[in-house]
Amino acid sequence: MSVGGYCNAYGAENAGGMGNPYGGLIRQPIAVQPECHAPAAHRFTWICERGHRGNPVSYCEWHAAEFTGRTSARFEGGQGEAREHNGHVMTIPWNLRREITFCPRCASEAPECDNPEHQRMMRGRPGRCGCRETKSRLRLELVS
Ligand SMILES: [Zn+2]
Ligand SMILES: [Zn+2]
Ligand SMILES: [Zn+2]
Image (cartoon, rainbow, N blue to C red; front, top):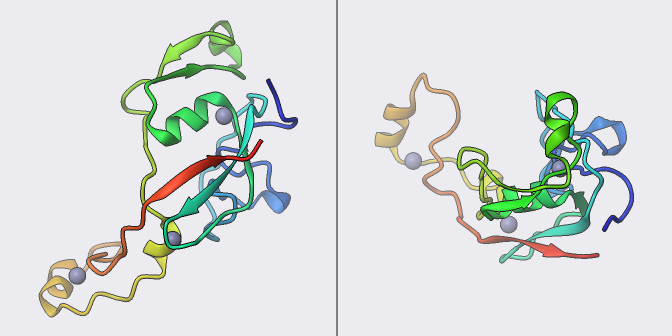
C-alpha cells in the first residue's frame, strides 16, 4: 500500500527542504534533518481541537505509528544493516515512541510568561517557561 513518494516524517520531502513534520502546521526549521527512506503508506493531516490544521503529509506506517504512540508497525526503507528488517512488523522501541498529543501551533502562539517568580527561575535557561501555553489536543487524521 503506497500513495506515492517517500515518507515525509522529517520534512525532507518539502519544497526547499523546509523541515516541518506537521505538514506546515508550524514554520519551524529543523536543524538536523534525517530522512526516512520508506515509501509513503498514507497521507495524514494534523488537526488541533482549536481548528489549526496542517497540509496533508505523507508518512510510512512506521512513522505514523511512532507519532501516534502505537507499539508496533511495519518497518520499511531500512538501509544497510537495517535492510533485513524491511517488511516486518516490529515492536517500536519505547524510546522512539513520541506520541504527539498537543498542538505545536497553539504552544508557539502562547503569550509570554508574566509570572515574575517563573521569570526568576527561567533566567539564564534556554527556552521559555510555557506556563501560559494552551494544551490543545492534536490528532492525526487519515486523508488517503
Ligand atoms: Zn517514515
Ligand atoms: Zn492549535
Ligand atoms: Zn511561567
